Length: 252
Length: 250
Image (tube, helix red, strand yellow):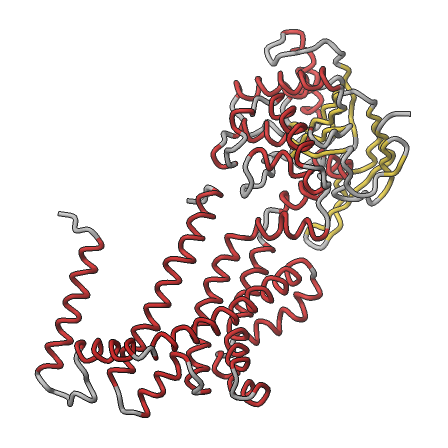
């Protein structure tokens, strides 16, 4: 018998939560160290009723989107330059690879000194954590374009900006989506990490507040929200975009 | 003066860090309204010569002139049709065909008038909204030809356009390209490695030698059209092509 995937998933999560609840109920660890799922839901409901969780989600998403848009735009431009101009690739390209290896939270001290404890500082960390992943993917996407597309377009008159917007970007788009997807994932990690260290509003701040208040259920609740948003945007926004592009190109 | 004149054209490639002479002294005149087939052993550089005419590459020696002007870069009067079509998968058939007009800033109304004409001519009217992957190889080449024709080029440069097609589809397209030629009088340079295609298409056939290549022989076929691949009058010409190629040791 073939069991539908959805059924398997539902059974798994129900069992996971039931096991967790059971483990909490046998009182191996004190409640304030190992809360039950019920405690977590209760805590989330409280944070929902006073609006703090929505405020946190809104703040983090606003920073995330701002940082991601900056990273996507910057990575697009830099990636195209790297792919099309050899000297840029040989010089700036090697620096980009190096910078990509720096975890985004490692930018936090610099961001605090440059921007202070502000939104701009957190957005900076978010953007800088994502921009190089986007750049590298865009660059390899543009480098892998079938050269006949470019030649055919040149032959029928495409030059400069029209070559970039009419051919290079659409031709490399399937690659770019995976770059944006990766950039998004780095941005999400970056924004939460930065908020933890800046401790200035947002979901990362709520995590930190949970630690200071010894409130483990708040910490777990916020972590579940962070996971949910990550899965949600990946599965809905990027997956759909990818499916649509792949279908049009006949790649799937 | 011929429309296209190639004088002493040579082209080198680097192979394992050694310069390799691919084209050696190509002299060829193409007159306005001719179809000239270029045939030769594979790797002989006939496609390279086509790319030089298109302006996608520049000769290392010698010169190619078009209407007396040296060819430098690509131009809308010489449009290349690639072996695989090189159609844009992110655009539908109509947008592929209109691409060149769009980048030239032609207004929408004029664009669709012009694309309709050639979509009709290439029997693509029912497929305008299709995406490229939904088309057969033969239909793709029709789109590639329509995309070239909307630019109103004077010369079509066809690089083994039918080599990936099955025989009936190829024969139909050989007929259609001759129809287009009779209607529009375009000059056509037709690269192929197939003696049948060369003899059906060419008013003249230029046989390339192997590398470093020059033009070994020019065979006159004449002007009777349309011709078909089973035309018995073409058999002696095909045999002549084959014997020229055989003498090259291919």
